[in-house]
Amino acid sequence: MNRQRTEELAELVALSPTDELRRRCEEDRPANISPVIQEWHLKNMERFLRQAAERDELQASRPSGCWCLGIGGRNISWFEEEPDSPALYECKVYCDCDDGRRVQVTATEERARRRAAQRSRQVGRLLAEANIPWRLRSCTFDTYPASAASRDAFELVRRWATILESDDGRVLKNSLLLTGRTGVGKSGLAAAALRQLIEAELMHGAFWAVPQLLAALRPGGDSDDDLVSSLQEVDVLVLDDLGAEKPSAWTLDTLFTIIDHRHGEDATTIITSNLSLEQLAKRYSAVDGELDTGARLGWRIFEMAEAVHVQGPNLRDRADPAIRKVLAEADAVLRRGRA
Image (cartoon, rainbow, N blue to C red):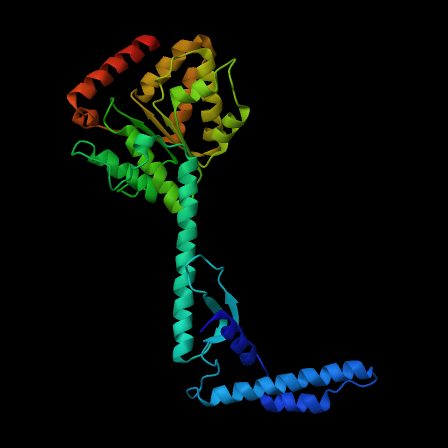
């Protein structure tokens, strides 16, 4: 049945009973109005009676108790049309006949499909906006290569991202600090946790490697107060590789500005570092001396974040030996630059 015919039948279904229409035709003739309006009123009532006769004729062929004329119900509303898809509708009131049940099931399934598609598009946009590095975009809890040594850390982070509770029932802090040596999968675990929060909670996220973030905010460059503000306010912020940046008073102040704000708001933050919390505090304390910003930064992280030490084999060892050699040489150059 095409859309035009469905709308014609919907108009018939909406009509009052024939006897009531006849009564209104006889009793509701307007008085004291112009002949033109009287004629218009009579023509309308005659049209309604013709439609009612058509409705009654169709109704006679329908199963007992059915009043929908085969369209499934009354007060229909059409779903927004999509290319290469049939025109579908739902009803405010469904008839208790086979057609009514069929239309209701179809409408319910279509409504669910469209909601799922809309949610999928929304998740896609949020993931695209989250700035997750290309190499980590496929990281999920299902694909994470957890080893026997990293299993406890993996399970804790997964529980944190799903129910915010440890396996012994302890309520976890709202943020995470993932520590461990290079290559054990901290960044991948952070990306998987961020993806989980985006997909399950539709949270806005941002993933930044700390050295790249500070480069984007460098003094004298294209510093962006709006970027700092967005990092303070975003639902979930990943600060990857904290401590890998070259330390300075400016980098310390910039990091403290972001982390201190998120600490005050108890905003969800995921931090990864090759250094322990104690090592981070000492590293930053050495920068500002008596100003004590480094110690305060360490304390903020301690208060806000659930500390998780990630152990296990170096996942980068799975790479081709030639590639590992290049990576090792590049890492050595970076380390000399930070010294």
